[in-house]
Image 1 (cartoon, helix red, strand yellow):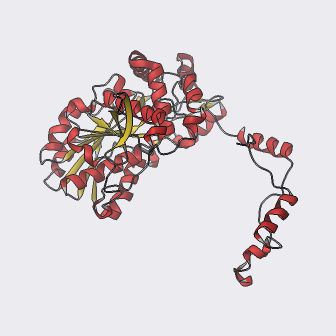
Image 2 (spheres, one colour):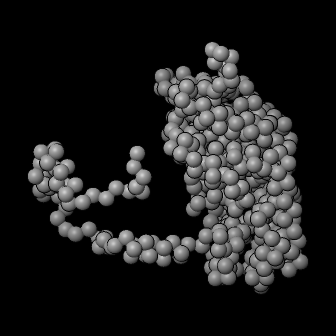
Image 3 (cartoon, helix red, strand yellow):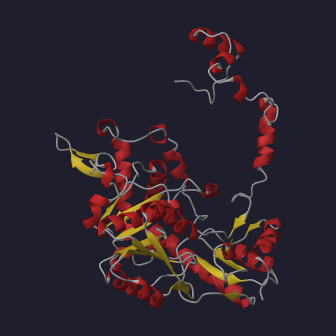
Amino acid sequence: MTTHRYLPMTEQDQKEMLAAIGVDSVDELFQDIPEKVRFKGQYNIKKAKSETALLKELSRLASKNADLKQYVSFLGAGVYDHYIPTIVDHVISRSEFYTAYTPYQPEISQGELQAIFEFQTMICELTGMDVANSSMYDGGTALAEAAMLSCGQTKRKKVLISEAVHPESREVLKTYAKGQYIEVVEIPHENGVTNLDALKAEIDDQVAAVIVQYPNFFGQIEPLKEIEPIAHQFKGLFVVSSNPLALGVLTPPGSFGADIVVGDAQTFGIPSAFGGPHCGYFAVTNKLMRKVPGRLVGQTTDENGLRGFVLTLQAREQHIRRDKATSNICSNQALNALAASVAMTALGKKGVKEMASQNIHKTQYAQRVFKDNGFDIAFTGPSFNEFVVKLAKPVKEVNQKLLESGIIGGYDLGRDYPGLENHMLIAVTELRTKEEIDNFVEELGDSHE
């Protein structure tokens, strides 16, 4: 195996390759393409540079990014700046994990299979559910797949989803729903949580699922105990999208009778990385085990009675009875699931609880500082690590000023919610210090009404 980062091609290499396939020039390779449709001009790209000059230019361009090492971030909205134990990068960089693909051959894939099995186990413990799959592409995909499973299970074509669910996840759901001719009804929020009266007015025997987020997009804690009987009134399914870190302190959705719990494991060991790739999770009750999209790793014993792991429940509609498929997901996000598993293992049960608690305490401190400085906190009620502040100026304008001071500001809710213009969604994780929070509020200055 070569140790080169890339393989250069010399003119001699090119001549030898052309000779091996029996042509005189590269142009000959394109002789089947009519002359009149071939591009004859020059591409609008820069001329090639030497390696040294190229590295300098790329470093200069990269330095323009507002990264989380140089800037203090109060931006969340689904992607968070959390502590990542150093061991995470060490483990996922090992070649046996880094280059692994689908573990179809259990006799040579025990390490990969066990890593996935541990991920599934920890997700079940956090969510309070019976079964979890080997992971999904991200939280938005997992949520849309949960809706499709619900429609397939109930044979209904209507889904109710709270407006307090992540706007991008709702858009992914609508994209899925269009091809399946499924009606998506959005339930408005009131004071930052799902309006239960509006939900009751829409629920009927045509509804396949009720979908809420916990904590929701505004950081508020939805009353799952009150939502569950409404969702199940006509035997629809109750789907909860949940931040797994928050479940270190919050009562898990499984304890409230959720049928499907989904979410994004980015909070554990996965860097923000410009919004991806992340790692979705998908957990269900035993009743729905055979309808889960993607794949499951199960525990077994070999002929000698030793513990082993295999892909299980794989004779599925996606592979054989395509006309009955409820999903086309046939893969998983194994490397990032491993990162999440390593992070959760390194933290341990007490560490996850402590990390989640710090998110709550630091958010409460930030809210007090904002209030003391004359800012209006938009929604009352318990929250996890996000809250909404009302500003007197456009959020985009405020964020530009903050960036000049080395601060990445919060999310502009006016982008997604009419009526919430000039409202900023602020995330405070365990990494934010008292000094950073105080400085953030100070930099905002007279931005309040």
